[in-house]
Amino acid sequence: MTCGIWLNPSIIPVARHRWLAPGRSIGEEVREGETLDFGEIAALSDGAEMIGVLKMDVDRLGSILSSGMSPPSISRSATLSDAIDLFFSGWLPRICLSHAESWRNGLPPDDERGDLVENPFYVLYSGGDDLMIIGPWDGVIHLAERIETDFTLYCGENPDITISGGIVVVKPNTPVQISSNLASSALERSKSRGRNRITAFGETVGWEDYREAIRFGEELAQAILAGDVPRTFPHFLLRLDEHDINWVPKLYYVASRRMSLETIEKLNLFDRVTRLKPRGGVTIATSYAILKTRSP
Image (cartoon, rainbow, N blue to C red):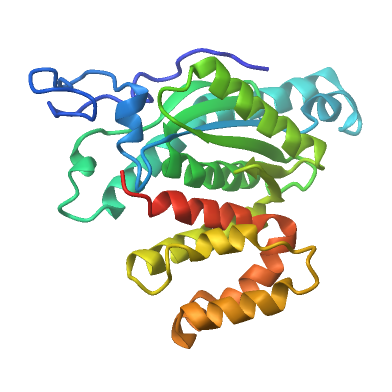
């Protein structure tokens, strides 16, 4: 049930002051109050200058409304439907603004991005029981976590009311229709794999595995930037085939040769990889780390 309307003018990336964005020449600066284009949004990312496209919707809401309440009644169904819509049309914009503020506060003091925009996210639509958001790729990756957490709390942690998501990371010049279709395909994959899941970087995982994968990816990226982990190591993890009976010995051998024991223990590397690799989480973690450490 998509409303497809702008909910709040503040949920559009708008320049806070004049600045020279990538692809613009002197005299063509972004003006104060001007809405950013996708290339300018991508420039707000860490590492690779790409955008993330997120789609989410509530699982089996039609079934819940039609037969999931006892005793069933029109008024109960209407109340639940209105409550779900209130989350997407009322609370979702506040989540985006809160997440944007956390993003700005988390930047280094000398990082000019914190003063460029109030909010880096486009809420293309949010209402009924679904949403579509475009923003800096890494911001969207983390925003999905926040939305699922808040939705779960909003529903009183009811295990029967869950939400699924799909994320794609694309170049900023990718046509919106193509990006939207790719995100829709990712969302449908999450639903076809059992719902209450998210698909990112081509892998479908449960929300807890997703959170662990993103934490692992963030720590791996920090270790790479600090020089403690070779930049080639995430690519090795991507190529590591868990169907190979020797994949665990290979992991131990390569990791032990390429980084210190202290770094391995700090990352909790062996435990994380052996748990997450068969479930797809390592692909998400390493893809995140690769993009995060790529030069703009």
